[in-house]
Image 1 (spheres, rainbow, N blue to C red):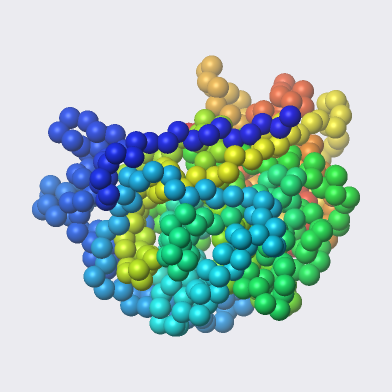
Image 2: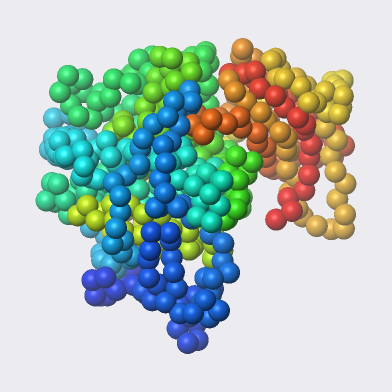
Length: 536
């Protein structure tokens, strides 16, 4: 019997509407970070400004990365084409703090709904109404899609750093930004339907029952506003999703694919998500260059990126459409169901797997601006979205089969074959599978730090050797990227936790490890491979 998600603990509903208490209070009513109450902040176009003097303001010396909202510029498609996805000009921006209301919305699995259900008709009506709003209305469906474009493809620069682009992917902002984005999208749908109980569905691609595009998104192509023609025609139902997919991957039978998907989920959610940085991604502060940050968390890389690429089209290899590229992903209604499930992974990691949120003030005080259901601009803070129940929604309790899908070793440890030292191989362009023998570092003292395999300096612009699959222990993961704009060549690192893997393989006493790198949609350049201890 597969495990299911534990019910979330619901908070008291006695607080007055609009009232918000700090997460935890200490003496003098301060939060653990020494911040004053958020209601004492004034909000301007450039970000947050303290009501107190600069010297006394605890935020004055903080450095959250903040977009320069008053200076939105054209974003860039992956093929270099300029695109205007800036929202309408905002004025009179107010600080938004969710009221402490009871949970009133339950997001259900998209597979729960049939194409003749009342919910399907209601959801179609909401999206249809969105699409019929005036183009100048920020709640218009296209304008909502443009919000994602502006925040992820160079529509904003960093406040105080005009030469640096602002980006909500590839760092610790990924989960909270998308949570707020879906929150307001859902509230707009509810407002247009005059139904406060309306909730978005989630596409539970992590469970065997949800590993196909849900029928409500592919029904009635000629009439349904939930249908999008810019999806990969080879991946429509009854095709089972491949959560390890890369362009041109061979197909396997459905039973094998489901097993592989479950193992990948176990690896990404458990083996490779031991710390906050593993799961959420690296810190992103003012002055950081997202191009060189290499900061994406485990879930963002896969399955998030893979679901995007698998769903979208590649009519033009240099210009993937809708779900296949970040600038256009919000144009497909399935985007919001996909990200609802990504958001659900955050809940599972916290409530099932014992994860914890960051307490870093730069994360908690990172701010974004959205238009609410009344078409009014509001400023929101990461620290106010950490508990989804305080945002008024929860998720249907469904089985989590991947909790019991730990990968298995294919064979007992054997003598390592001959292979070259990484220094003799890299840098190189990876056009075929490469084996290198990587020496393990010596531990100093009695520390228990985990070993990390680091693939250094991955450079890519965009074959297939099947060395291993997610259901086998020695498979560590992949590097999957959803095309961005920015007109840049990306250089990044990829890190894998290997302590548990080495133990499971029975090779914990070996001095070196054989590492196989396999191009799946290359070529791409690799500058080095090494093993180091987790410094965190």
